[in-house]
Amino acid sequence: MLFPITYRVNARGHLEIGGCDLADLAAAHGTPLFVYDEATIRQRAAEFVSAMGEAGRVLYSAKAFASPGFLRVVAEEGLGADVVSAGELELALRAGLKGDQIFFLGNNKSAQEIALAYQAGATLVIDGAYEFELLQRVIPEGERARALVRISPGIKPDTHDFISTGQLDSKFGFSIENGQARAAVETALRHPRLELVGLHSHIGSQIFDLRAHQAAMDVMLDLLVELKRDLGYEPANLGAGGGLGIAYTKEDDPPTPRQFVEVIRSALAAGSDRRGLKRPQLVIEPGRAVAGPAGVTVYTVGSIKDIPGVRRFVAVDGGMGDNIRPKLYGARYEAVKVAEPEAAGGELVTIAGKYCESTDILISEIRLPPLQPGDLLCVPATGAYCLAMASNYNGMPRPEVVMVAAGQARVIRRRETLDDLLAAEVL
Ligand SMILES: Cc1ncc(COP(=O)(O)O)c(C=O)c1O
Image 1: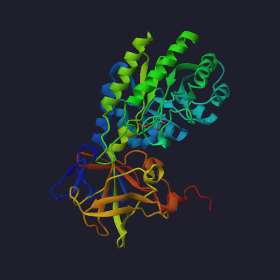
Image 2: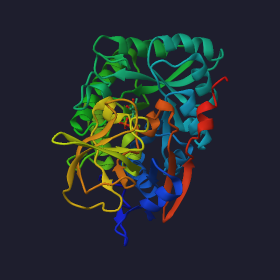
Image 3: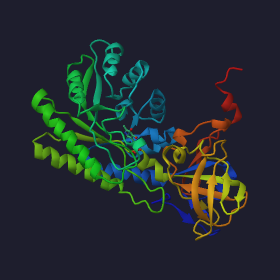
Image 4: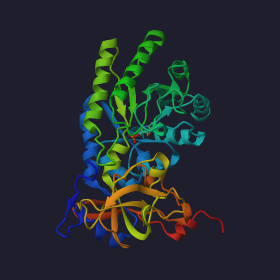
């Protein structure tokens, strides 16, 4: 699934999402424009929740995209949120989430962030020995913060090295391999300001091979056996993180949310039973798999540069400031012309951004129908980690975001203005 579920080619031959013609949206809102399809968000979120059933809970990982207008839709489908900063916490609270629906993660939380998370009633996910000291200082005497301890299970999934986090050489989590995990659980159990409600793990992102999650679950359950035997501790909750991959190109064939949950659920159930452990409640926190397929970006073609025998560069009015992923991870994308979304073949072109970096290339080689300045291009699967990582590099205001449903578009984030660029400057 490359496009949102409401993808349609309308009577004008134009690409339509959520009953809205993307050319009309571009005319009304300008480009670059991020378009989120409400039906796709709801369908993806609901699939995670229904597959989970009574086995546990689903949090949406707000780092993928955290606009309150988006979070509200996700929350309406019954998901909580995982946040990693005071900023994401505030966005989630503004979206109407309650503290007890929020987990606060992060490998270097500040004292202020811990205090805010505690006051909001969020559950902390401890990720580093320093946090035990901070808790001592921040949590009032006689009170305890609800917390999980983040474990690094030592699994290296089949994904880009930069987005896998469960292996030993990672800044995230207490490693099982070198004994730090067990020591952290012992510290947490003795800690006067902390109520240990479970263990957490996350092995990486954009993972297609679910065997990595099965293997991680087995490693975590082996740790639970050791903790039960030696410390008499059995966690009420076990976090398995997020990580489900999505299709960015036509060749990508990721598992579904249901398959993802069912594999982890059954690994937990069968693995606990086999080891004589009480089954903890499962906590998962997908981000990309909820937001990614729901979002597309619309750009306008501008300058076209031909280097005969070498390459044709087609420049669009956005690029690395609104989608850093090609530059950061070598991520690959597809694109279609809004006016001819299903045209076959075409000429080989490179879609370049407008930022002053040679590597600001959105798609290095793609076949598209002949393009002219003013044509609209749509890049699918840009709902996650694009706007969330957007910058004002080169003094570019960040794009507008609309949510579409049943032929209506509502702005959930307005286009930034030049005044916004100056808002924090001291003149
Ligand atoms: C701890 C944690 N949980 C959840 C996620 C969300 O991952 P994804 O967007 O791949 O589902 C991440 C992102 O890498 C993460 O670091």
